[in-house]
Amino acid sequence: MALLEVNNVTKRFGGLTALDQVSFSVNENEIHGLIGPNGAGKSTMFKNIAGFYSPTTGDILFSGQSITGKSPNRVASLGVVRTFQETTLFQELSVFQNVLVGCHLNARANVFSALLGLANSKNQSAERKTHKVLEFMGLSNRADQLGAELPLGSQRALAIAIALASEPRLLLMDEPFAGMNPEETQHMMDMTRKVRESGVTIVLVEHDMKAVMGLCENITVLNFGTLLAQGTPEEIRHNTKVIEAYLGGGSH
Amino acid sequence: MKNMLAKIIGIAALLAAVAVLPHFLKFYQQDFLIFLIINILVVVSYRLVTLTGEWSLIHAVMMGVGAYTSAMISKFYDISFWVSMPLAGVGAGLIAALLCFPLFRMTQFYFLIGSFAAGEAIRLCWIHFIRPFGGTGGISAIPSPELGSIDFLDPIPYHYLVMVVVTICLFILYRVEKSRIGLTLHAVHWKAPLAESVGVNTWRYRSLAFIIGSFFVGIAGALKVHYLGIVSPNQFGIGFMVFILIWVIVGGYKTFYGAILGAIVLSILDESLRELEELRPALYGAILIAAILYLPNGLESIPSKMREKFATPKEA
Image 1: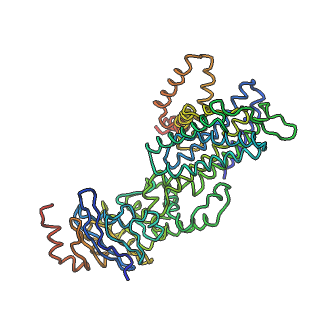
Image 2 (image 1 turned 45 degrees about the vertical axis):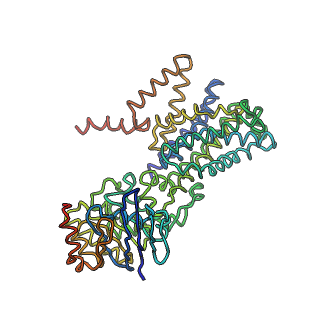
């Protein structure tokens, strides 16, 4: 059974139809690419899955359970966590604190122990988890730096670390390769594979074709809000409709 | 560790100074000092509410809710101040919890206006329902605390009472801000979508900050009216709320001590201008404008500015 099933999702903003009857599914533990030219509806799709938008019609199932129209924090608590485009971090917090916020779901802080200043086993387990995630993402030596002070590659790694701290089953990554040089891209690709090997399923929205083709087992292509094609990187590469959408159409 | 020790010694010295201070003051100055200490609790509890980025205009009224709660319980039911004071916090916290449902459907300016409207509605209830709230005149002859043979009508014992209660409250508020709850409150302020994406219920955390802040300002309200002996609606109007805002803004809201600094400096300033009578509001206003122009980051930014000033020539 597929881990994520998107069934006939339509999203309208007033008169504009951003997504029109889109269906696709993501298998457990794969890296699934979601691509398409600018304005194809990738980000809209993404926000619908993560709970930031609610589909006009259609259904989204995660692990057999409907997550359609649930709020982002509800969706996250079920195991679907997104990262953001560009570098959305808590710039004012240290790297360690950034990841500590991410531990919210699996080691929730207690109000009364905070009020009374008691040491609490949940806080200790959150700190252990934070150390583990930082080490996993290779950020241990930067734990005390401010989020804003990190170089781009590390900021992206930190964004993933925050998401991983909440122990997701499905990680939605929004353009993690944007603006990276080839070296950083290579490093990020290795990281992404490492995250998948730890048992997390990944959906990747990305423009960097080299990264998408190199990483994904399956790819869904959107164009003008509709499903254009679906298949393995090899199939997508030779799909005439896809080639036309990217090269033809006069949009470039 | 050394830093920590210095901090503890500093705070102990400060507390000792505040403890002996009233013995060197005139009667009306002792009064002034008591209200100043209470106002410190008001601004610090307000700070907790603003940590999530939502500035409310209801904090003064929540102080009033605590004040009325404690005044009514102790006067009408003859219950001791030592019970009614914590109940003042509980009362303000409960009202805050109820208000969360309508208020936190809004954010930013809408929340600001909404909180003002809710506060005015509560204040109008106090004015309108003469029984039990006493109308515009409020409730007078509120019993003062009793403990052995200590006379709490005298400013000096009351000064110590206020000092102990406020110190405990500040300590708890400080701990909350430095806890993981406090961290999450900051996170909700800076990047609410990111916090939500890792499962933080932002509504719940905004409510939590509002309830805890209201609890402590309710206690401040009880401390105030059991000293004055009277509680009335106009003590907690928008005028006082504006003072709270000014103290926090001029003091600075980045650090825990900024708001405290603002309340102390501006209150003393205001008090020392008393002799100038009609000129007082104008001068106070001028000083405010100057503070905002030359210290946009608040009084709390002075230490780091000084450091920069003294450090630069050495480097050059």
